[in-house]
Image (cartoon, rainbow, N blue to C red):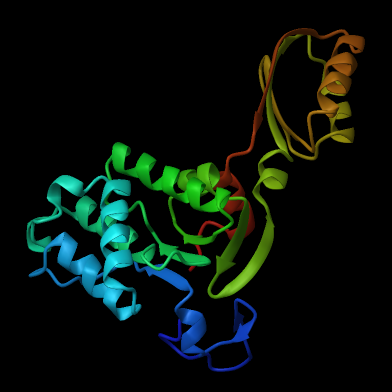
Amino acid sequence: MLLGLIHPTAGEGSLLGVPLGDHRVRARVGFLPEHFRFHDWLTANEFLTLHGQLYHMSPDALKRRVAQLLELVGLTPHAGKKLKTFSKGMLQRIGLAQALLNQPELVILDEPTSGLDPVGRRLVRDIIRDLRSRGTTVFLNSHLLSEVEITCDRVAFIKHGVVLRTSPLQTLVEGELSVEVRARNLSPQAVQGLSRWSSNVRQDGEHLSLTLEGEADLPEVNRYLVQQGADVYALRPQHIALEDLFIQIVGTDGGL
């Protein structure tokens, strides 16, 4: 909808402060779809040159920009090879290069690390970080939540087209803690008293697991257990992973 590829059934929207549908605004946006179909009879150099011409870039500026981008995505040695000979990962990288040709203010990436090996995923992450440092907004859609956790500043959880929650990523991952405690001499009363910090306390012999609102509760929980006569051998906090938060917010039936 933002790019004008499909039209909304209702409501209004804007892109870079301008109502949707303005082609002059779309010229300030880069886009890499998940399922791309490139001109596989063209070489990498020809493909980027064609897209640069669609942006009406001058020949000299386009030549320099194509060389820069091929170097950026690690495809300079393959500049003269036809896209039909490229692997899925190489096509993903040349697609990212074309999304950056016009030095966009906004880059929309749909599953940009799909099909990439670990080296390719790191390269894409580094490019996104560099874009962010230059003030470019990157709109990233991915089901690989580990990539989102590494890359993004803000996240939105969407289910069946409805945004359930939007938040700075740091606020989410530095919030609730999952805590594992190993202690002996745990009385039923001591375990029950942990409910003042957590509504989700589980015990399995000497092992306790509970969820806390933040790190500030850790010393209080430790002091409480000792005061109740428990011998605390280990207290291991761990921030809840984005994947677990996704399940909590969206549910087990997933979201689209």
